[in-house]
Image (tube, rainbow, N blue to C red; front, side):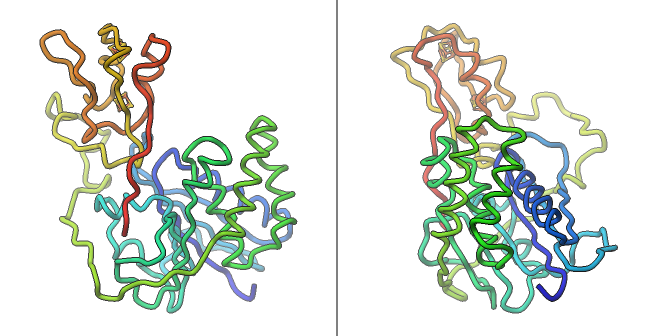
Length: 300
Ligand code: SF4
Ligand code: SF4
């Protein structure tokens, strides 16, 4: 590595971008690199868009601003683009000529315009579900990133990752994550785009900096007006046959996604559900009458 490299991660809260970015910085820092890892987000909750940055270099890094020029952009959740929470301009902003774009997707071809970016794809969500039983794609994507940026040999980085994860997680979760890392490293592939084929056109939505200070709710019942269902590539599924109509799920839902009418539980509004799982915890039936499921992936 001859110069400082900068990475920008686009993710949703809960997908582990901050954890992966921090682990990357800690591990390379242990081996003598100068590193930074810092996130940028507003009022936070699971599913909300998050941006995280890394800088990695061989010399002291004094710049602590957001990198204006980046070597790699990472997209942990393509639904951010499909739902216009991140537009293509933001995703590619500052990416160097022939810079790297790494996306969590099983796609073999992109439909979006990528300019001169070299595009890499990994079915990281599928790997995460297979290896750790949850759609948390951060570690397989980290494996892919370490490989495409040639940051470290796989076995060496894996040993360090085992040490980092082992400090916080049970042994079987660490083992699953190490398999996911290894698969991410091995399975990442280059894919092609179709320049000019499709541009994702987004209406200008207010960002968190445009919201009232202190997240003050100026009009009551405001959650009814927001289609928060696109905050996640998971959603909640209701099973009518086991439901006892206790409605314990209704008061815990932060997005008004539980549909109750005339005293009857009627289901889940998937245009609002962010798959936070609170209703699943509250549901008393065995088996649960609510469960979190994956949605169809969003092609970009
Ligand atoms: S998982 Fe349940 S509580 Fe959470 S948003 Fe969806 S319906 Fe509401
Ligand atoms: S908490 Fe479970 S059993 Fe009770 S109404 Fe909701 S889905 Fe039905």
